[in-house]
Amino acid sequence: MSNSLSSLTRRGFLAGSTAAGLLLPLGVSWAAAPRKGGELRISMAGGSSDNSLDPRAFTQQMQRIVGVAVCNQLVEILPDGTLVPELAESWESTDAVRWSLRIRKDVLFHNGKSLDAEDVVYSVNSKTSTRATTCCAMAR
Image (cartoon, rainbow, N blue to C red; front, side):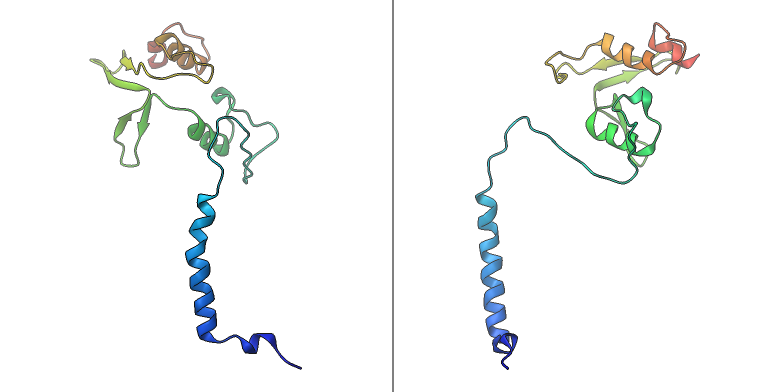
């Protein structure tokens, strides 16, 4: 009884592997060009049937991770604690109670509406239980 693997030599294996390695990048060039739209399905541990993309409804760490991946923040906090502008170009405060934020002008929502100060105030106020009318109410 002959064994087909016994006819494979080391030289033959290396030649075949090299050829496969050289041809592999050619498959990438045949991929379809990216296009807008479509659907992204993600499967990961930690999800739940009551998950939401509404930041006010986040109850689990996994929701927060997805939310940060999908939505922008006013300011990003780097691992070393440094603040980096994201949606806010700059910010300043003289008393650490009242803050002035300069919002980027080039930010668009998925429906084409541009981000403005009212959107930021709404988002901040939606996270407070008192439904305050200004951003400064969070510091009270």
